Length: 336
Image (cartoon, rainbow, N blue to C red; front, side):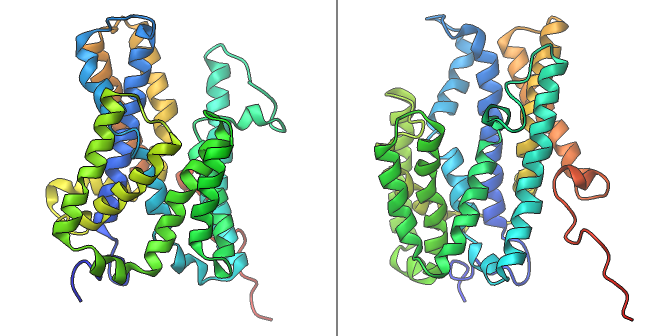
């Protein structure tokens, strides 16, 4: 079996190339948010500090791919989960996705209060849950909908996503839900036909097709930022397929181990980074560290350090309860 044909075989180890792509995407998310909070004071300035321009460029260049790639990778290995019973499948998603949503929504809102703010709403109101965790909320919805792929083909949900993204109002959360849906279900679809996909698109063709994400990124950076823009969805899908086809040859090199680590613990990095970078930026302001050339790297690197610390302890009780519930909530009954 060639490396490409066996790229989704998890029988012996984790898939390093997927961890690398996931890790890079998470790092870009953290860099984007670090850039966002540092550039916010200059939002109305026609000439923001030049030192910020490379970071703004990177943020806008990768806008069409950061979250879509994470969604694609989330859908890419779903068939193994669907082999479980419906109860086991749903419980797995509730304890590993819904639970950290609940925990870190509470953390986020408590941080708002501690910072002198007020709650945006009560727990029974949507405003309470309308936080940076929208990504995980979407993933949970897609995983639950994916139960239907036992009877409904994945491509039907790709089409449904396109219908929704064009018909629903722009720049709304519900439109974003439908925009990202095709990326998740493209992963589910490609998984089932992976060998055909690999055979149909050889490496030279895939490398040539990477011109698509390159062009899309440049358009986003120099023309208009393509944040969940429906007309960018098709080239975005094609670009992600090309990147995935090439990425299976990413070596398991030692220098990529930190990136793979981030990918392996992507959920922890995602839920921790947002309150971490906001707190770090506020601390920097209070101690007088305000120059963008200093504060942006500090926010990014310290956020990474804090998130890494949580990742290192996050699989051990009791810290693991911040990120997932135990597989079994109560011990087995002893046989009579």
